[in-house]
Length: 181
Image (cartoon, rainbow, N blue to C red; front, top):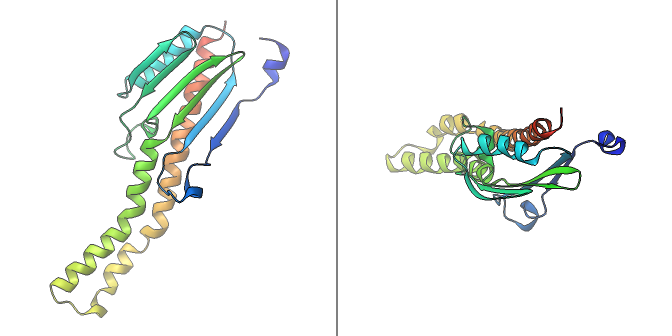
């Protein structure tokens, strides 16, 4: 590794041009990350293959300096943060190793945690109306659901941050495993 590559810092790029700016609040974002790399591409890709296939990712291509995988997505926030990515494209170009990941699992979980509180309130109100409760008796239910309007955005942001950190950590690990000793 030359001196200029050793001094480079990892680059984190997040493409948010296709998210909320176009009115699609729950559209999957693209996360990109790159770090300096010079070494054994096969060893680096072995680490990623092991980490991702063990989480249920399907290997789509594995050719030379590029690997593409498709994942099952995230069903719960108790699963591995890597499942927040539904498509992962790893590549070694020049003196860096880079990843582009579609955060489809994060978008799915974000939709759930953001739509759950209004859906719960609506079903409670309809249920109370159906059994003939007076509207002034509904207040306790609304107070119990109210905090979720603040908790939900925090949970969504946390899932996204955890997925990005897991992907970035995997790429840094790939660079370490593949580097000459």
